[in-house]
Length: 554
Image (cartoon, rainbow, N blue to C red; front, side):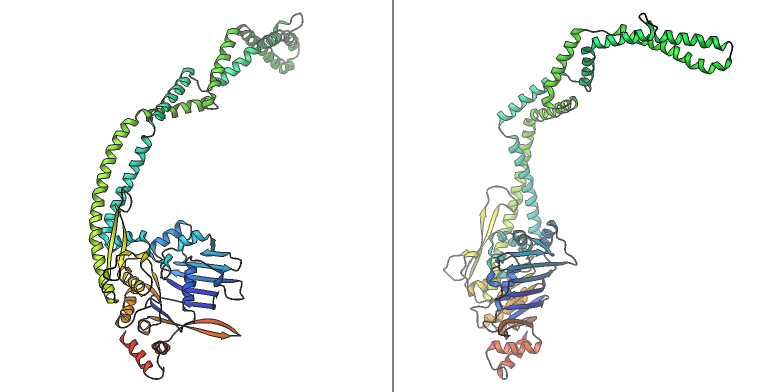
């Protein structure tokens, strides 16, 4: 419900700050005081058209802010999905209209696009008189209202229908995927088999390419390797006419051994020379073995080149052998899936047929319940309308069958109405405006308000064109709707205003040569005087007594 509203420079409202609570709140004032301006401001706050004409003369911008508490669950869910959390359960909205034409929307103090803003605030308030806020005039909401009117049993069955519909749609979508062009699947299977065979024929091994490149490098440089290894052996051991390292170390070793005969302190020099001597001997042996084992086979180099070319051709499947092998595994899995599609398709068709039967059974039950509740709703509405002087009215719920299983059931629902005998029933959205429209709206709200999640209802002169005993019934209906809800009503009728739990008086005043609208909550005594004014009599005489009697009867 709306707990506070703050309006600045909006039409004749210079600065208005109001607080509200549950129950029926009445707004009244003389003609021309600007009673509907507050409704216009609330409409703007709820995402309605924000014209620069609303900006007070001489000002650059207008501002409307509102605080809502105890918001409907679906509104809270939408806000949370969009990332807006309610602090202390409060939703704070504001819209700023600028002369430039730019208007700024804020939710919880954060600027949001108008489209998102409208989505987030939808469902907070139902305003009679502004079609965009009237759920009853939106055919898309009629089926949901009818199901809610049917109670828990119908809602449980609706949930079962929705689950069955989703299950069927999922199976149908999978079937459509499997039934894509058979030629495409066969073509894909041929491609996969060719690619798998190509990789299998080459049979690449992990790290094989690195090993081949190393071997190729050795074979290509075999002459350099043999030349250098021969030179190494000669320098180490053979000498080739010169003293080799082995010979030189041997002479040093022999000289130190001779010295050792005369001076034992020489042993510290002999030991490392002995180690070097034998190390060179072992190294020379290794070099000889390497040289003798080195085999240059031109045919092997050709084999390596050919193998590397084969591996290179597989690069289209991956940059490395490991990636190529991984691609092969993925293709094998896809091929397995394709070759088993026929079996899956047959099982899927069976499951789909079973799912369809389940949906049709539950949807049929729901349709029967809806038919029963539609009749019950029509009877209840007839009684409500009769109280409001529409004894000859007719109401029906028209159902339109839907061809495909879907969430919501197998039919769409729309409310039709006729106010007079002999007149054809028409969709609610096409019912002529005026007194009949107002009374129909009130009757519908009286019957359905308890099942609607909207917490705040606004009626702008709902008593228009109504008089006599019926005007008393209007007040009673508004009181009924206000039970556990919040109802705002702008009225000229004292008989309606007397039912209010709260009453605000709207007046025009002139300050510093400027006209402005003042709105204030009335005390009980002030209410009596306002009711007397609305009755059109002299406040000091019978009108005051009549006003007091109206309040006493409530």
